[in-house]
Image (cartoon, rainbow, N blue to C red; front, side):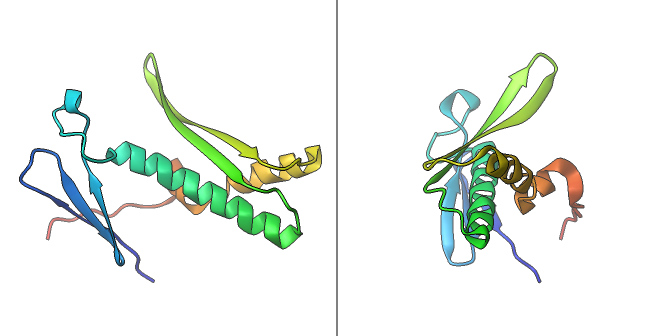
Length: 129
């Protein structure tokens, strides 16, 4: 199976168009970084992809278990401190979850395929064609 995204950097500094299946998005940099701020940055898309994947993974698991957790919110942040950069996730559920459910859902959140890719579990093969 092959899934993908095609990104074309336009002639306007850092503005790019991305196509994924039948969907389109724009990518840009903020004005202080030399962009036009016409769309999210690549890092913001990555954070969104992680949050989306974690929330969907949690919903699928909760549904299989028959747990009604209501809305699931996943906030993902890039933290830069001194010489290190890391990501932080904050997960919340609209409805009450037990301590046992919380522990299990925390483990399941780490099984999100996008997060696993970011953690270095996926090889990236790069070539110029």
